[in-house]
Amino acid sequence: MPKIHLLSSRLANQIAAGEVVERPASVAKEVLENSLDAGATRVEIDVEAGGAKLIRIRDNGSGIPAEDMGLALARHATSKIASLEDLESVGSLGFRGEALASIGSVSRLTLTSNANAQGSEGSSAACEGRDMAVQLKPAPHPRGTTVEVRDLFFNTPARRKFLRTEKTEFNHLEEVVKRLALSRFDVAFTLRHNGRVVHNLNAASQQAECQRRVAAICGPAFMEQAIAIDAAVPPYRLSGWVGLPTFSRSQADLQYFFVNGRVIRDRLVAHAVKQAYRDVLYHGRHPAFVLYLELDPAQVDVNVHPTKHEVRFRDSRAVHSFIFSSLHRALADVRPGQPSGPGAPAPELLPGGDGMAIDTVTGEIQRQSALAWGAPETARASASGGGFGRSLTPGAVGDQMRGYARLHGLQEAAPEEVPPLGYALAQLKGIYILAENAHGMVLVDMHAAHERITYERLKAARDDSGIRSQPLLVPQSVAVSQREVQVAVHHAELFQRLGLAVEEAGEESLVIRQIPVILRDSNIEQLLRDVLADLIEFGSSERIESHMDEILSTMACHGSVRANRRLTIPEMNALLRDMEETERSGQCNHGRPTWVQMGLDELDKLFLRGR
Ligand code: ADP
Ligand code: MG
Image (cartoon, helix red, strand yellow):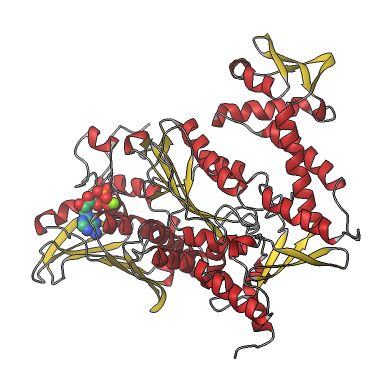
């Protein structure tokens, strides 16, 4: 072996760059985070050739004093932390002091900055991968900083080869900008690619402006079919928007989760969200969400990974259960007219403490969603141009109702007297119920709706009367690890509650003596293994409930009204009232919508009325 020697600073930086600078998008992320850390309120991003040729980011932040310019490009040089205590409560996005040094070692980097509030004098420093010596010279620049990164990986051909097409690289970069734009509504972002403006996002402070930004980034369909969330159980707060179960995606591509303003990807969080959607999402579909978790910075370690995409929570189980229960509650309320459908009183944030406080920052948006509940994407799309959901405020509901009453010579009814799903008029082709409510026409898929109602009843009956279990004729032993035995013993009560008797039978073996009757045909050993794996990783598991629910769901499907059954008007009305009462009734057990609303204005549009 050759003798040990110190690496040159260039090589050390290039090695560090391997972790931080994977592609143009990672350059953009680091440089933009610096701008946000510097308090910028406006950033402009210019990209050429997907970022491989040029990434130029200009901000109006605090700037860098001339005497610090050289250091800014040096490794392990930062203005953001000075001690270990600082690291434990770090509020800035960056703190490792290695981004600029790393980027500079694999590109041609120019940093131009001015820290003076007045005047346009500034200075610039340039470094070119090859020689890390920084050249400083005066350069005019308004207050703020411009970082120009040219020819990424020009001196590391092996890495350059890993770059994909211009389009792919730009998509990644755009995704970075979107995430940061979702994390900082107060900052204006402009993104240009090859001279063309791709995003121009103004700073947003009002709720409506924030919603507009989310719509610009996630698409208007998401915003129209999202429920606003704002739940607080000190020391945690979760806010943002989650897509209705009927607005699901084939890929997990519309999922943004921020922890104290930092976008993260985390298995624990993903699991909690997935679990919350378990009972309402079509199999294999993915929920869409933009969620913000806030907690004391000391409760979360962000220094887990160089790109800081992962975090570690001090009390990960509490975080898991908080996210799960907040979303679960909100999704259970997805049913016609609840919780803040038209005419509902404005919700108030309950004081924190042991109780769950679910509420909306925006009563308005929940109201919109109440109207869109159950509406499939296509039906919504037809309500283009501002459409039904968006323009309908409680006042407008009243107006529309009065207009409707006038039109039909009906007695004016107060909005609260008409139930959310209205009254049945007829049955269509033995499949749909046609009803009339305050806003216009309602169509209900009677089988889908009945299935959900039956299912929720079966679950409620099980929860009320407890799970019936039966002893196994021959107890089943299961070989597991020592750790799994400990976990099983520790959670004995959980198993008992679910009707399962699981006991320790040796250092590495468990024995199942009793199982729930409903699971008698299931692979109980596999279920037990999966539950233990969940318990080890997340501290909780809903697999047994989930499996029981699946069986109940099948039973519900078989026991529900089939198509082509004639229902009387009172039977139909009873079904509508049941839907309004039943949790999760906005979608059937398979995640399909159970009802659609067509407002008068949508109908008018069909007939070109009022043009
Ligand atoms: P870190 O962000 O971890 O501190 P960087 O290498 O990204 O490390 O940046 C080094 C230092 O350069 C920062 O700590 C900051 O003081 C300064 N700096 C970088 N970019 C900017 C900017 N856009 N505005 C003001 N200061 C900046
Ligand atoms: Mg940085």
